[in-house]
Image (cartoon, rainbow, N blue to C red; front, top):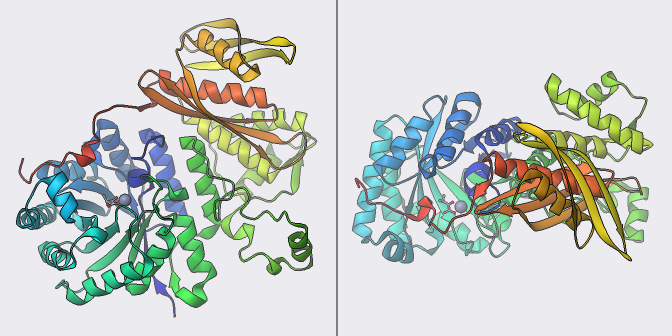
Amino acid sequence: MSRRVQVFDTTLRDGEQSPGFGLTAEQKLEVAHQITRLGVDVIEAGFPIASPGDFAGVRLIAEQVTGPVIAAMARANKADIDSVAAALQAAERRRVHIVLATSPIHMEHKLRKRPEEVVAMARESVSYARSLGLEVEFCAEDATRSDWPFLVRILTVAARAGATVLNVPDTVGYTTPQEYFDLFRHLMEHVDAPEGVIYSAHCHNDLGLAVANTMAGLQAGAAQFECTVNGIGERAGNVALEEVVMAMQTRRDRYGFETGVVSRELYRTSRLLQSLTGVQVQPNKAIVGANAFAHEAGIHQDGILKHRATYEIMRPEDVGVPAHALVLGKHSGRHALRSRIEQMGYKLSDEAFDRAFARFKEVADRKKSVSDLDLEAIVCDEQATRSVTEVCRLESYQVTAGNQSLPMAVVRLAHADGAPRQEAASGDGPVDAIYAALNRAAGFDGQLLEYWSKAVGTGGDALVEVTVLVQSGSRVASGRAASTDVIEASARAYVMAINKILSGAAVLISDEPAPHWQMRAWGD
Ligand code: KIV
Ligand code: ZN
């Protein structure tokens, strides 16, 4: 018999708070809707007191997303908890995630509090949150480097004050599977908690042990695990939702766990996040990487052709990876495209569909036939473009390059609030030249920080996806685009980053410490 465990998704809080993953409130809402379709139990929507943008994101999700519990993070003080209560007001089920450090090193150097004072903060903050009618999850931050007797004491106090979920995080990715298992067993035996209180595992991947540690925590009896899509998060990231879910599904015989996650939505969720953040997963990433189901070695291909199970422990379709099959061509009409996109599980508004159809026609004109993989790249392109305010748009470009001549580019940009501008520039190569010309035409002082490109599918006419990271002053933004022409994809990706920065949707880089770490005493 399987045991049902709760999935607590913190992509929009622990994941989004790491550098380079910033999302606007609308983008967070889009991710929250997709995570809901995926079937998670709890969505941690953000840390409302951190910034007005964070507050707006949590409020929007609380107003519009139904189904999962909506959670938001607070430190153990009234102002943070009030901010969570205000942001979550419209949610059906509202949970505050109160975080308070319990390890000697954190209490002494970060909180600058004595253990007695920290226990008092736990009691008062949980009671206060309960008095506001919030469901409370209490988190003993840096639990895996805390003294076990102190953990027993503070978790008992939190549970007796009304916390119904006790989070025991491996904040710095330091524990080992056996140690984490033993810690949960010890807490379950010694914490004096009322009936119904559950434990949660929250693992970071600094030593590459996050999945193993999460499984160990659940095997010891934790009833919830906390995770992010694609494993995004602080430093080496959080445990990846898709990896834990597929480990459970593939090895149910061994683990005996089940979740409410619809595994066919995993790939789409991963791609949406990559499109919106502009941060791509590595090709060999388990479950959702481009090579996760590719078989290159001749001996493996031979085996796969004879019987898939020889080298395949999961089927690509189980996680929703689109097929390579060629499905549509340049004579395919709107109806065929719409029904194929819907069969693939995407829902586009009429306006979004019109734009996707125009992009499909462009691609179909250049390629003989269009596969599900191509369609998926087109839809991701559309999703990423739609979520950005268009301050300027690439109308045309021309590039000349060769090993005996100076690369030159001419671009024409349409501007939302003015006449189009045409500019020319030279560069070290064709992409450098086009970026210099785009900077001029947009009146933009930008610098390329990172550039990635990857082919979608195979063959000389394959679509290419380009992702860039661009900095202008104290702002950084990513851009992403797909095309059969690498120069066009490069230019459109750069224009998307320009638009994010000019419209204020970029991430602000600052030397200020994040509010997360500015711990105020209870009542301050
Ligand atoms: O890793 C951690 O300890 C956290 C808490 C703030 C929940 O993310
Ligand atoms: Zn964390």
